[in-house]
Structure formats: C-alpha cells, structure tokens
Image 1: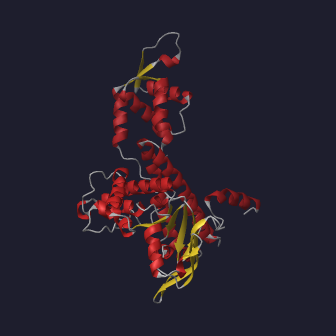
Image 2: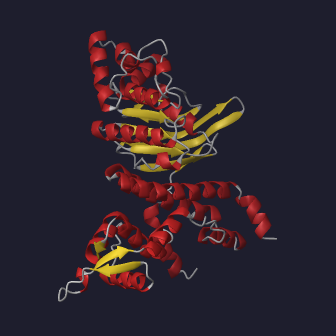
Image 3: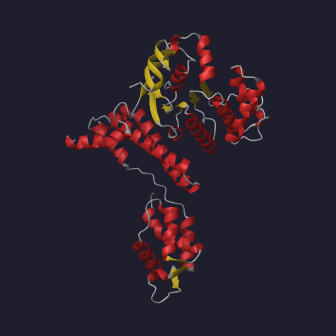
Length: 179
Length: 245
C-alpha cells in the first residue's frame, strides 16, 4: 500500500479520536484493521505517540506510577483532531507512475532488441496469479479484507490493461525507440 | 499431458467465409478445473468455446470430450450431449421471456424428459441457494440484470452438468453484481465438481479461475505451458543471472 509509513501517525491519531486509549490497545486495534500481516512494532507505536505528544497533538493522562509506560493513556487534542480532519478531507495524491519499472523494462527491452512481448507475457502471468490470490482472500475473508483486496485488484487490472495495450503496440514502439 | 483432460481441442481450425477465426487452437481442460479463456475482442475465444461445446464444427482438427470425438458426432447426438451433460451461461441471460423464472431454470430438465412437477421442484431448490427467494414466478422482464443472470446460472447448473460453458457471464453486469455471480458460479462448481470453461476479457473475472489461457489471432497461448507461468519467473531470473544477462 502506498503511503503506508506516512499514514501510521495519522491513523493512530484517528483511532485516538474514536476514544482515548493506551498504547497497547492502540497497537492491537491498528494491527487488527490496518496491519494486514505487518503488525506495528511496539517501539514504533511508542515513538510515534511520543512525537505526537511533543507536537501537542495528543496529551497523556492517567499515568500510574510504577506500572511502566504502557499505562499511559493518550487523548487527542484539538490540534490532533484538526490534523486528522484535514488528512481525511484532502484527496490522496494521484500516482501517475510515469516512470514505472515495467515501462522502463519494456522500452529497454525494445532498445536492446530483446523479446519484450515475452516479458509482458511473464508479467501478465504474475499479475493474474496475484489477482487469483487476492480474489481468494476476498472470497474467504471479511468485508474489510475484501475492501483491501479490491483496491489491489483494481490496480493490478489497470496494469494489465496497460500491458495489453502495450503488447498490441510493440512493433510501432520498437520502431520509435530504435530510431 | 492430457490424461486428466475431460475436454480438449486439438489443432482446431475454423473460418467464417474468408475470415479465419481459429488457426490451430489447442487447449485441454482438466476435470473439475475452472479455466479462464481470455483474449481481446475478435481473438476467437468465443468461437473456441462454441467448438468445445459442439455448437460449431471445426473445419479441421479434433474435439475430444470424455474420451470421444465430439466433432465426428451427428447433430442429434451433440444436441443430446449439450442438453444432458453441458450447461451454458451467456452474456445476456437469454431467458425465455414467456416463462417464469422457475420454468426457465427447469427448462433443461423438461427438455431432457423430467416430469414437470419434478423439474420445477428441482428448479426451486436453486432459488434459495442463489439468493433468489420469492422470485420464482417472475418473468425475465420483471428481474434486474443481476437476478436474471443468477436465474441463467441456475438454469446452466440445474442438470448438474459435467461442463459449464460461460461466455462473458458478467459482461452485462456492474462490478459488484458481476462478482456476486462469479462467486456463486465458483462456489457451486466446486461443490458439484463441475468443470468450467469461462470466456472473459476481464482480468478480475478471470481471477476466479484456477488457470488462464489467452487466445490471440486464433491460437491458444497457455502461459504455463510455454514455460512462462508465474511459478517459473523465479527460475528465469536465476537463469538470467547465471548467464550474466
């Protein structure tokens, strides 16, 4: 998923807007919905919460002496809530991927007179294999799983359309890049 | 290679007038397999499906079904085969508008000689299964596109066919409805052990299949058979590194 690392602090803030929480519970909630097999390390959770506190986006309450840092309860501030609101409202930067690896490989293959069509077929098979995996996740998982799988499926489908179009244009492309 | 194939096309050639549609198509489908036949418009993928199903006869080449030459059977025998052992779902459900939904589903059974009461009883069991409860008496004009296509799916499966031929079964549906139809098709096919030949140009539909082949210029390209299946990519990379290319 793009923007994954950048969105962690904002996602944690968003979860805190729902309700104040301890670091442990926050991590558990994050992993359950957003982690997807990549759970957040505790260190990252506490480091992020520390930065959010420093920047005035959360405040800490209910520190119970002697119980260690996990007993801190984090509450979102007005500044933090505004940041979540802004992030949710602003559209995500569309990623036009004008310099993708696939594009580079095709053009280079044509320049070097290598079998670009074969490379595209290989890529098509890899894409379809991944789409089958995501479809299986979608069929066997929850609606949230399906939501995420669909995001992947639509992006892979867009790639495949590009692959089909490119495959159909290879001869003309070859003439152009070999000039 | 074809020991486990239930249906197979060998070097099938077919032209419509001067226009070649299939130019030596080979494909083998294993029993219980869901095969997606992909390819651009006009590539010959629907023609291939029609040849496999015995609807069209090839100019040359062979079609084998369950160990028999389908292309050398007479029309009557092929017709019986289609009715009793094959099921069909097309892009536009093609329900008979004068019949109710349950009569449409029962149609293959009625044509096969099952008594009307028994055929309708069997047909009705499909309505709950496919989320169509309460629609038994509707005519096709009173069904939504997704409902009509699910009725068509039930009709395609009601005689428990060995092979279901599906030609762009979601082509007329929106994404969500199309996926519901695909989900049901795959679930039922797996339960019944039905082999499915699924013609589609949509990758998201093909992703419901076990395997895909691509028809291009009237020939079948099987990615795995050509050594470029996904599982071979890793090996190719290693090979490329070894040769220093």
